[in-house]
Image 1 (spheres, one colour):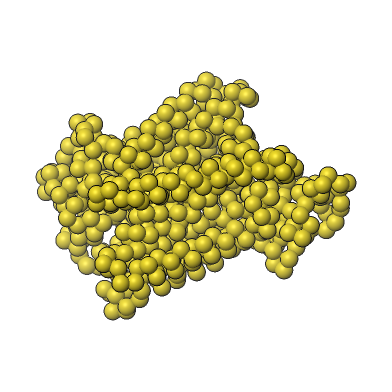
Image 2: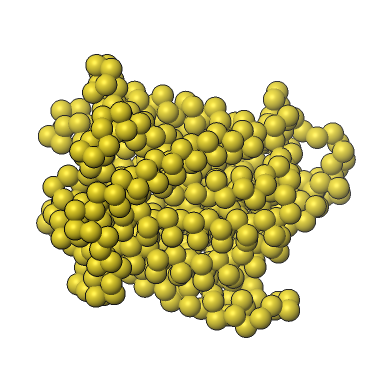
Amino acid sequence: MSTSTTPSGDAPVTGPTATSGHLDTRGGLDRRTLTVPSLVFLIIAASAPLTVLAGGVPTTYAVAGLTGVPLGYVLLGVLLAVFAVGYGAMSARITNAGAFYAYIADGLGRRQGIGASWLALISYNAMQIGLYGLFGFALSSFLEARLGLTVPWWAAALAGLVLVGVLGVSRVDLSAKVIAVLVALEFLVVIVVNVVSFAVAPEGISTQPLMPAEFFAPGIGALLAFGIAAFMGFESGAIYSEEVKDPARSVPRATFIAVTIIALFYALSSWALAVGVGPSQIVAASRESGPDLVFVFLAEHGGVLLTDIAQVLFITSLLAALIAFHNAVARYFFSLGRESVLPSWLGAVGRRNHAPVAGSLTQSALAVVLVAVFAIAGQGSELGPLFPVLTLFTWLTNAGAFGLIFLLAITSLAVLGHFHRDPGGHSAWVRWIAPALSAVGLGTVFVLILVNFDVLIGAEGPSPLVIVMPGIILATGAAGLVWGEYLRRRRPDVFAGVGAGGTSEDVPLAASPIQGANDVRR
């Protein structure tokens, strides 16, 4: 049984749980399903270790022109670990699939929370959909090179989209198990690359890439701007807070573990690649081969079989990241639908598996539309086969990272606001020192990304995209603020419940599309 209150303030109406077919418009997510290891794998999958090594690391060497890339990952890892101090403490108090949305609503105000939710939605969608450009290109290229099959990039992308969509409407622990296998294989192949690199070492096991002078030099802005994108997804642990066992401990613990692993692994792997190619040659080689550098290196020193295995796992690495970001978007849609901030049908979950089905299908539909748009736009493009990589992937993922970094900085301010109001026995380090440091550090990285955005998207000369892409992200957040003000004035009952879903066992759930009510599970 559930109790519902009509928007007009009429007396509560009691009735059975509203259902439609296999969907439940009043149910919640599958609670207490995920363990800490499962959550760590989901977080790391979004960062895609092999994708970073194969694509991100050579690109960072090439664009920054510095060999101090390993130190960049260490510094960024420390910054994000400092962010995780307050973020983790807040996640122990607020368990909400909306994460950023709920935290900012609590710490800075409901209207700001709604603005953050719109910003999060477009940023996560941009990251997820943009990855289809690289996934489609990589799978299409591999099938043609190894099997002689000519498959358009968009068809390969849609095949991946179907698989991701199926997992998105399934139990979250199924996605976690699939991701755990894929991430483990990613780590294995990266470890092999590292071992081969240190074994070859044409200039010896040089520590040059670890020297501060190789990092603190002109080009550091581009290095940090590119480097931070490799960590995107580390904050996603809080999105699963309603589905994890013992969220007060599991989410902070998984976040710290994931950040530590990602930072150290990226630093080690980028150093190993520089050693394998040669510190004096790594920048030039990265500029010449780009994302193919790792595979060229393996072909020279590991043989064709190892190269093919690495390329297959590169594709599955992208698939794991697609699944992770898809799950994040679906839960944001669910959280906003549950609280009627967006249409309440978005809060519908599967009756048996409690997956955020409506949110998952909505995300898949958006992905289909954008992949189709870029497929049509790419017909006859002078960019040739690289069109989806240089447009869909590059434009959207960098725009998404831009938005997420901004959200991280704002969330640091929200943590300050939350603990200023309710210290809860936490130390000064947790309450304001760590959040203040992370706000300043992440704000600085945000500015660096904005200044270097032309470099990030590969623009040659002045490009309107330098203004258009960040503008779309920020304008969406501003539109969310306007919508929040509308709800405050016209739908105060909905506005009053912003960010409240999932904070206790009495969780406000989304209204059914038929009744239009705000339900409270008793």
